[in-house]
Image (cartoon, rainbow, N blue to C red; front, top):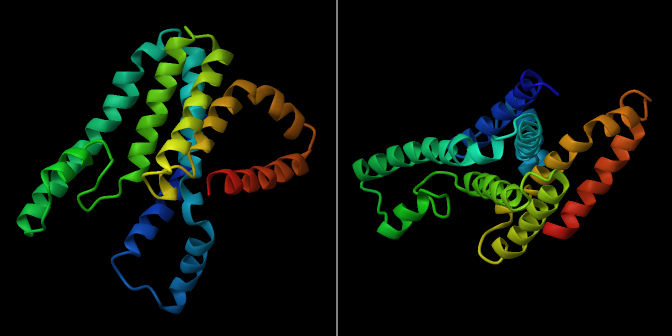
Length: 221
């Protein structure tokens, strides 16, 4: 999968995410809006699974291609993501002050890392920042040993799920396994594609997707 291909696929889901959030501010009930409401009900959190999966896939392919990529992850992935998010947080804080919406200092401070919110959505940023951090630490510990780094990172992600579910709602953790699957897919892509794409074994992918969905639902829900 190229960067252009993943961006096109994610573009579709970005539209769905936008419409999903837009639906929180307006009442959609016209006949022409029924198809979206139906899809929105079916997909739910699934609309962000591609972002998680492709993030894991993209990070892993970069690690395999660039020898020093792990050392640059704090700047290129973690701090960059946090900076853009925090700019948006500052705008929310200013807007809330102008509208006399009450906020506590604790709420404002924790909102900059996605633990709390000031009117914005927080769960995805907290989750993806943790995924990037786990990957960085995992591969630093493994000293770029790919399999060892993947195992450590996956262990951290599993631990994150077990811990965060005690403090936050399910959306904070029920899609993060897709990030881990993206990491593993990147390293096994050639073997997986040769078994599925080139031999027309589409039923393997379909069956695997069904089993994976059931596994995720059983484990993290």
